[in-house]
Image 1 (tube, helix red, strand yellow):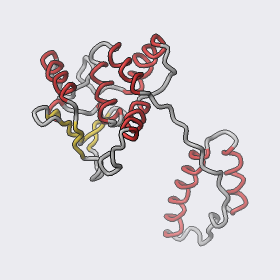
Image 2 (cartoon, rainbow, N blue to C red; image 1 turned 135 degrees about the vertical axis):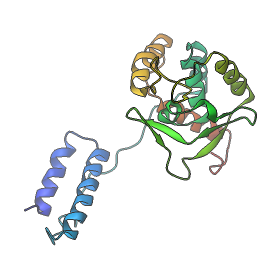
Image 3 (cartoon, rainbow, N blue to C red; image 1 turned 60 degrees about the vertical axis):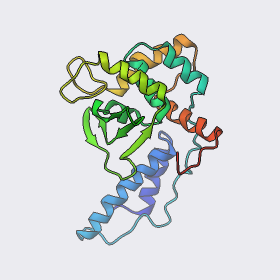
Image 4 (cartoon, one colour; image 1 turned 30 degrees about the vertical axis):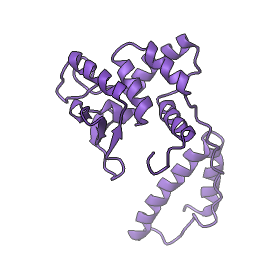
Length: 214
C-alpha cells in the first residue's frame, strides 16, 4: 500500500519538524527495511525511485579556540581537568574518553591507546580499523597523567574516569552538570564536547598538519 506519493508526503511532513539529516536517516532506515521486505516477497514495488529528499543541512558546529580550551582546562577541577585536557589534545570523542582504561596510558612512549568506548552506559570495543589507534600526547600531558594516576582510585572496569560506584561516566550528565556551568562562569558560549574535537582539528589545520597525520 506504500507508494512513492505516500512516501513523499511522509518526507514533507517530517521535513517541517526535523533536520534534513534526520529525515534522510529515516528514509535510509526505511530503505533497509524495504530491501528485506522485497527479499521476503512482500512487495515488488520500489517507492524510493525519484523520491525528493531535503538538501543536507549546512554544517556550522561550534569550535573552541585554543585560548578557550586552555581557559577551560586551567579552570576545571579534577578529574574534569584531565578529561578536558585529553579531549583537547587528542581530539578523541567523549565516549572514547569515558571508556579509556588506565592501562591504555602509554606514558613512557607519550601516547594514549584508543580501543573502546562507552555507548549508552555500556563499554564497547571500537570495531573499525581506524577507530583502534594511538594518539600522541605532549610531555606536559604525560607528566600530568602521571600525577593523576597517583591519586586515581582503581575501579572494576579499570577506567580512567568512573563514578563512585565504578560505573562509566555518562557524558551527557558531565556536559550538563560540569561543562555547561563552567562555560557560563567563564563567559564562553555554550557548546558540547565535540567542540574540543573541532578545536583540535582547527589548531592542527592552522599548523599545516597533513590530513593523513591528523
